[in-house]
Amino acid sequence: MKNIEIAPISRIEGHGKITVQLDDSGNVSDAHFHVMEIRGFEKFLEGAAVEEAPRITPRICGVCQTAHHLAAAKATDQVFGLEPPETAKKLRELLLLGQYVHSHALHFYILAGPDLVMGPESDPALRNVVGIYKSNPEIATMAIKTRKIGQEITATVGGKPISPVTAIPGGQSRGLSSDQQADLLAKAKNAIGLVEKGFEVAKPLFTKYAEEIELLGPVESHFAALTKNNGDITYYDGDVKVIDSTGNMVHEFEPENYLDYIEEKVQPWSYMKFPYLKQIGFPDGSYRVGPMARLNVINNIPTEKASEMFAEYKENFGLAQNPLLYHYARLIELMYASERAVQLLEDDSITGTDIRQPLTEQLMTKEEAKESSETRRGVGIIEATRGTLIHDYETDGAGFIKRANLIVSTGQNNLAIDQGVRETAKKMIHGEEVSEGLKNQLEMIVRAYDVCLSCATHAIDGSTSMELDIYDSNGELIKRQLL
Ligand code: NI
Ligand code: MG
Image (cartoon, rainbow, N blue to C red; front, side, top):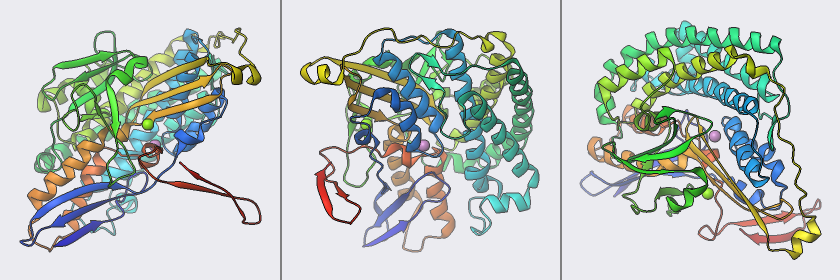
């Protein structure tokens, strides 16, 4: 018996590997996708003032900061019983669109692009961003320009290009001036043109790699995403809709009721948990989130060019199951994000000054909260670029976090990724000689989901026996805590 290890998986966010076990005749007996890092933010949040969560949680990850900032802000609004004014909601949506433009452009062109532009079995020394730049400088420049526009939206609306700070309980800490509105509008319009050009280059790749699309990682699963207005695409708000693998609706629920529908399981080979649909069971209740899942769940994209792209995609692929189509869906979303940013910026209400509902309710003092059993709760769900993101906080009466649960997009795709890697390995590997190109094709399955492992492995509970050692400045152990 021999084990094949593909480690680390490159061009993803975080640290993961694939292992494949061969039996004596050289066929695959088992294969798994492993996540070896752990971040622990659910635990770090305990004891923090809940209004700090929108500033703490963006540190989970170097890519998805805006998503965490906003999911945390929405949960925090609820803890304090606040409803942000319309302008604040629009600003938050715009902030999230900035993240989409930057993250989707980064993933398609830089992380996934090399497999499709240079080819899955091309020389690994050039199958990367440098290779893209050498062979196709136009794509590389387009990628950088598009991504930059996303970062500029985040910087202006969020206060900083990285780890934004402007979403606060009840709204936004600062608005948008008319000058900023004009500047971002010009940039967002420019993004539409860049995405159009990018799509021209990218679209033929989905015909060229039709065989790989069929071969790499297909699984049948449920799909989940936020929707609103009877099936419109939405990123910032809406209800969660779940469909089965044939497209029939199985659940539709409000964010605060997610625990009636979603449960998480731990498996020994990974630090990343496996969320599944509770009423269907494990593992049949496997569901996927993210661009391809969203386009399966929604019926409508309410912007011009993205809706045309969506109609063509639907006609060609129907209810998509093959992970490489995540790339196609991502490009449609990149267009939607750019067009929706233009829509929001063309509407002058974005410069409104009523951007925060102030807190008027008197909270308990810390001392009062110690004596009281009163708790507060807030659940914030948004669509992060990689999929549905849930932040759920329970606080004491003074607003200090007692329990935090984060369910992150990549976790929800974990079952499908693991299964897809295993099924594909069984089909493709026969014998101990496994080419680099074939290994890369297994990595391409993981990459298609645009996994973010830093984001997804914060879970620490009784099922993982991790210890935290705390030392003083002299290196003396002060405390050892079982997490
Ligand atoms: Ni992330
Ligand atoms: Mg969790």
